[in-house]
Image 1: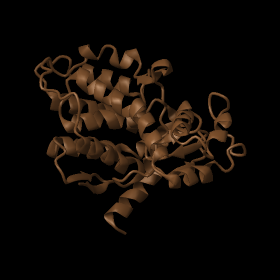
Image 2: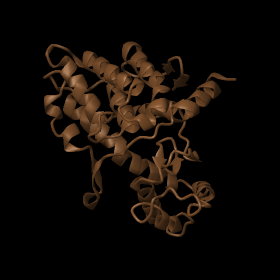
Image 3: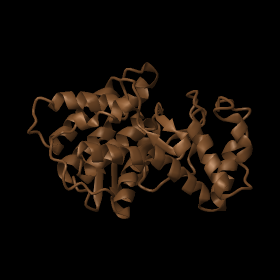
Amino acid sequence: MTAEASTQARAQSGVRINRRHIFVLSLAFGAAHIADRNIGRVAEMAPHSERTGLKPHLDTAMVQRIKSISNIFEVGAPRADFGYIEDLGDGRGYTITQYGFVTNELETGWIIERYTDLAAANSLTPFLAQLPPKASGTDSAKLAGFAKAWGRELARGPFLQQACDEVADRLYFNPAMEAARTLGVTLPVGRLILYDTILQHGGGEDPDSFGAILERARKTVAAHEEDGEVEFLNAFLKVRRRVLADPANSETADVWRQSVGRVDALSGLLAHNPGLEPPVLVMSDDFNAEVA
């Protein structure tokens, strides 16, 4: 078995996490924001007072590199897997793509609505009636044919992928970059850490969420104002690892415990390649992959 195949097998068996997408969404403005509790007070959570030199935007290559590393954790390989669709039997309907969208959340409906804007006549639009907010999105009988329709539309062209990327950026990547800007996180690996945490844990107010992890990390370093970005990120990862090893939500405890290698790999990058200079070696007991 190749290193990539081995990583993919481990990732799909243990890293596909059922996140709780608890975001405060402003649909009127087409934007998603992490709840005020998470980001509204992040100016008070910054690892240090110096916030100069933060680039407002990452170049395209770095954005892709960050997403590719999280893809390794989600689907076992750097390349995106928009064709991944599976009913995991977890009560959340279908789990879709490397982003882990689920049909019992509003997100899948948003993807289909955006896709319909781009490709009006398609075989996914009829399923909107079976998805939130109109239905639960978990009834396998009512979703019969959904997986085939997804694959069929994916094969038609790039528009379904585009819709997925747009929704994922709105839910995960853009809020992570805004958090980095507000916190003064400048290292590429720091931005990766924030993005990957929101992607896996979601935002919101529960004790396993991004906001809760951030708050606990802030308290860890609050007494040491001289602590810099690396120290803060190390504290953040230590808290995140403890959350995965012993989450408050018992429903996800077993599978979350299997994903601590995700944090170990990020800790390795923080120590050895904070600039994410290619090739990026993503390694832990569970992962062994390379991102160009």
